[in-house]
Each structure stands twice: as structure tokens, then as C-alpha cells.
Length: 390
Image (cartoon, rainbow, N blue to C red; front, side):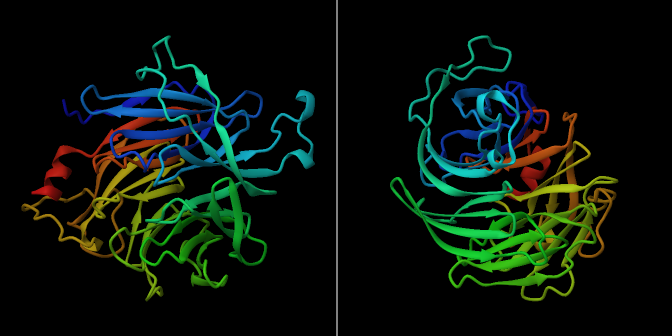
């Protein structure tokens, strides 16, 4: 039975910051979440969402003792996943970590192919037993955690990019070997990158949020250039490419704004929207099926669903008289306001939201993760769904 109510999952039980859709699984609404706790043994959990019961449940638990800072499931193999982790997080012999122990690493893992038992909810005592996972290859280490782990769009799982500190590295993967193919210095003046997105249209360009601006790295030539010097007044926190419009990206930042850019003419944003009042806008993600839908998350513990029809590749919905009035959630600084609205604000989180992820199965489910480890599955409202489909 279809429901517009969000489903909560409380089974992580530890502070967390990593959540990602299992893009290689088109049969389930499947997501991987990882805990990030300094003093406890951490773990990965495979979460499944059911449309029939409107429940978000745990399908499998995997041991991952080190803190998990980021996750990236392989789009061509559901059992492969990249993780950024803190090496020797508890120090040797349980002592506090030394500076030499505090390096961050990126590892490619293989998860067990079989799910051990039927999914269980967080309140069910028969939670799946923790399973070990196999190390496949190491993708280097750095003094700072990777802000982005990216698989090549449309690739075969043999090419990935890591962004840590101010460096972007393209890796060639083959079996149990990972070869560093290209290294690009993507930031200037000692700034650290905050987020990155791989261009699905060219496969050689990666957009990197660094400082207040947006840089573009060429993974083939090893060069980088500034695409937008001042994308935001304060730090730019996230970036994503439009899945259907080449050269178009969206950014969000500490100035609370959501901004859309055409990188061929970056002098002014195509549109600016006040995304989160009085709080940073920390995450933004395009819907991969319908590019008029976007999700944002902020330090205000809110998740927002936006319909931005004026900038999408497909025609916008036909609006009735008066529809869309007052729905802008703070409004925009230009564009067709009637076609661009805040469709819904999802509550439930009690801490800053650190990740949002759209389901790979269909367009109508997204999940969000708070720093406290609470996960929610949200629905695109029926009214918005019909405006797009009809």
C-alpha cells in the first residue's frame, strides 16, 4: 500500500555520517549505511525499504571496525563497495590514537553475496548477525578523510576517483589491484575540497566544491581550472550534475542557498533559492529519473524536496490557477517561480542531516541520515508524482 508517511530506522545505534544507495541493485530499495564512532566497533548495514509495508529494515550487518567516513557502492556490482575509513582509530592496544595512526584510507571491499535471513526492523531482537567482509584493494591514504568516492558513470566498475584534501586521484581497478592513474591538484591556496561529482555526460570531468568556488578537474589530462570563483558567499558544501542537461550543475553552501549553474556561462547562476532558513545547506542530490526533483539537507535537521521544472530537461507540469503560490520555501532570485517550488519538508531528524540518497530502483523514494545514526525513508508526495507522470 502506497504511503506518504516517512519510515524511520533506529538500528545503527552509533553516530554515523555515511549513507549511499546500492546503485547496482535494481530489485530493491537498497541502501548502505556506516557508523562513525571513535571508541566502538563500527559496522556497515544493508537497509531495504518496502513499499508494501512502508518499513525500512536491516537486511544484513557487516563488520567494519574503523570509523566509516564515506561509502560508494559499485554501480555494476552490488557486492563491491568503497569506504573511507580512519586507520587504527582506537590506537594500538586500545590507547588514544597517535598522529601517525590517524591517517585515513580508502578500501575496496567485497560483501558476501548471500543475505543471511529475512530483513528485520530495528525493534526486532533477531537482528542479522554481523558478517565479515573481504578486502579487495587499497586506494591509498591521506592525512584528511576523502570528501568524495566516485565510480565512473556508466562504467564497468574498473575506474574510480577519490578526492581527499586538495588532491583528486583517478584509479584503475583490476581484480585485487588498484593503480593510481592520474593525480590532479584541485584546490588552490591550501584549501581542502568539500565535495565532488563526476560528470555523467563526458566521463572525464569532475566538479569539485572547494572554498567558496567550484573547480573542474580533467581526469584525462590531469589539469584543473576554476569554473565558478564565488559560487557561494561562504563555503560551498556540495555539488551534483544534472543527469540530463550537459554542463549544468547544482551547488549548495553555508550561505543557505541552492544555486544552479550552466558551466558554459558561469557569470551568474541560472537560479538561486534560499534552501534552509538560518542554517547551512549541506547536501544536494538530483533525482536520476526526473531531473526536476532535487533533495537538500541542512544543519537544521531538515530534508527538503524541490521541484525545479523551469530548469529541467523535460517540460514542466501544467499548473492550475493559483497553484505554486507561496510554495517556494523562501523563494528564488529569478526564474519561473510558479514552476519551481518547495514540494515538501521532511522532519523527524533531531541532529544535522549528513547524507541524502535517492533509491536506484525508482524515482519516488529517498533516504536521509542524521549524525545521531537515525535513518528515514521518504516518499515523493503523490501530487508531485502525478504532475510529473500525467
